[in-house]
Every structure is written in C-alpha cells, then in structure tokens.
Amino acid sequence: MISLIGFAVVLTAVAGMLLARRIQELATMVTVCAWTKRVKWKGRWVSFEEFLQQRFNLRFSHGMSEEAAKQLQVEEVESDERQPLRTAGEKATVPMVKS
Image: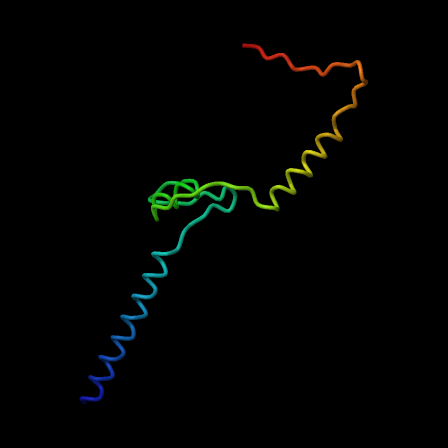
C-alpha cells in the first residue's frame, strides 16, 4: 500500500514537471505572420523591432545583409537595362507632379 502511494506521489511530481515545461514552452512561442513577418504581441500585430523592444527591452540598429545587397544590385542593373539610352544632347525628362 505504501509503495502505491509513493508511486502516485512520484507520478504526480513527474506530471507536474512535464506540465510546467509545456507551459514554459508555450510562453516562449511567438506567432509570426507568414506573409508580413509581423509578430502577434498582446493581441495586436507589431513589427519585429517593436516586439523586441517591448518584450525584451532591446535596442537595435539596422544594416543590410549580403543577400539583400546583391538583390539590390541585380534590381539596379535590371532597372538600368529597361531605361532607354539617351543620346549625348538629349535631356532626361522628369514627370510633372500635380499639386
């Protein structure tokens, strides 16, 4: 009889530890939009930077990854290739903006 009570106590303790671990896992999960990469935080969708600042009080700066820099270069070349070439005396035209 005592061994059954001891077994029940151990089983309850193990179940409690597993439950605590699962709660901790859920508390550390973050929902991220698959399209916009915004983070759901306290019921609203915020930028990743805002999430980091609010959740962890982190400061951050911005830079450009090598991948993004290469993509920007490709886009610039493609843009230049789409532009018609001007002759030496021809002026570039600027679209008129109505106010």
